[in-house]
Length: 277
Image 1: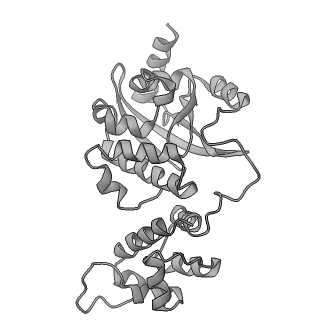
Image 2: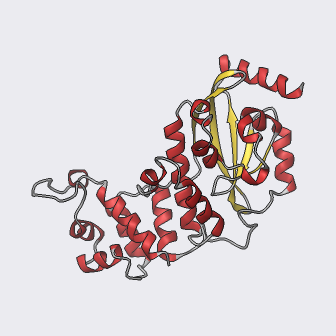
Image 3: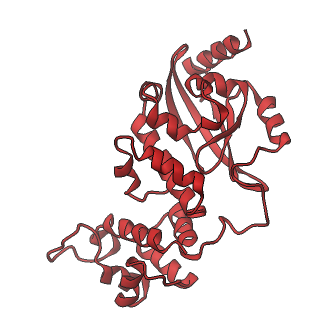
């Protein structure tokens, strides 16, 4: 059981909640801006002593009902609730039959799908944000990453370690923090994975990483918009969707599409023409 990680996570979620947001008075002197331990215990329906032992990482294995109470008390979103369950119960995410390892190659049918939807940029990543496979348009979209050997193609390593990433990602800080939150979620899936631990050690040498890492934020697959400044075709505003592949819950299939007609669509068509030439 990842007791130390769970203790740190609970404390980080407690510190971010204003008492008034959960129906408690703000009055009284507080050493920290968030909830007191006793207040979390009250909201979760457990004793203050039991909650204190959880935050101290004493090796307690809470029941699902206790975890549900904590999730409500700490106003956890779905990604955070799943992360808490993984840390507390050391279960796969989600519980599932045996499947391909996170670092394993993608299924050949997935690679055929990637190639078939080209020129839509698409790629497959694992929870650590290693790029396991992509199509030609994704490689053209991310030329700096394409320069790296396949074993070093990691989205977060690129964002934090390659100075060019700060120009490539127009919303660099948001992208970096989101990636760190996804990496934090990966530690909940397998806290002892040596490759994940090695990546965290490597990235810890980069400015800002430890500050964001210690926030304990977690993110899973989702959808939204990414803003890029491509070195050849200029600005691109692309909508992304991340989908978990069936049978391989540790592999995420990501697509990037232009939101209708406009400059981004024209830039993508120009990039596709260059990639074919």
